Length: 261
Image (cartoon, rainbow, N blue to C red; front, side, top):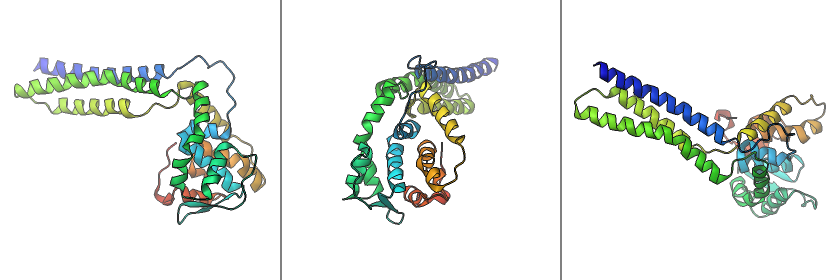
């Protein structure tokens, strides 16, 4: 009886300890380089959006900017955007790709799928700045952080099979194994995107955005403050603004949607 209690206590301790080790490994390996004492990098609004939530946010931010400037008209019913005015000569490559596509197919989903190539330069720059983790390293981080928990999970499965063969209770052990399985899958499959430095810069950008001085006109509020706020926080900030129709294109059932930051 005492031996059984000791074994379960030890396995509980190992489950907790390996999760802590996994978190430490995941955090440490995201520290790509010692940029912490350097000046924060200068980022474009689309690079900020990419840093916040990937290429889709960057594309949506470009569309929002084009809607605000009158180049595109959102249609919430069809979740599409219609080209309103001629293509400007000095627009950003991402904006140019979106406007060219809008001539033929204004579907939001089609736009997102078709202009991803225009986000590659900003992705490369964010990686070069040490704000995003390269794909190969991200996979290594996910695998190495999951290994300690997977090891404990395999040990727990072995203990469970042995206790079953001895006609012993396994309820608590199965519960601990389930916890270890969920934890290991989380470490293994939840993608690593930003570096530790990238998280720090994003936190700084969001804090700065939230403390922008109040504006007095619609134009000042939308450009650049509202677009920047959308880039950093997502569609939730567009409610009751001049871009509310675009918000409905992004989230047609917005009233029951949950926005995660």
